[in-house]
Length: 139
Image 1 (cartoon, helix red, strand yellow):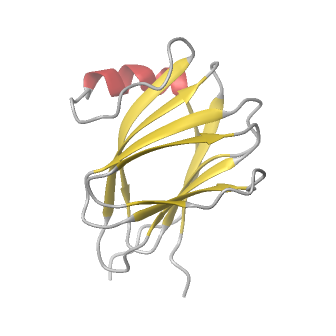
Image 2: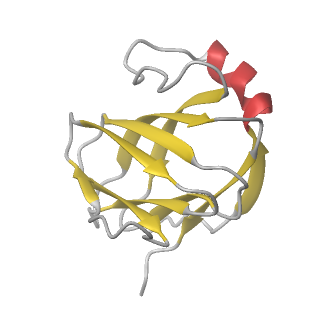
């Protein structure tokens, strides 16, 4: 079984703006806001794993996602300060979620057999760094 190792890196939204503009496609969700920094990217989440975005950032951010893959994805916040329940994004569906200062966005692949595929748009009110990493599937 092929397993993608955990990794952690901090990516600057401005550095990725240029790269995402080169790969711009019509099936990305529209940018959530005017002004600030916008990142559009394809995202694959291995079976049973969670993609984590953010944490310890000085401002909130917004994520719009279009599920273009075969499996559902749960979108939640950590910590969940507002008491909201996670959103389940079914294949073919779109969703928007807002995350507060210091919170992390957790996008969990609900399938243990198929890779989740999303087109995401991330908006931030300023040029802030957001950590990005995967968690491994629990044993």
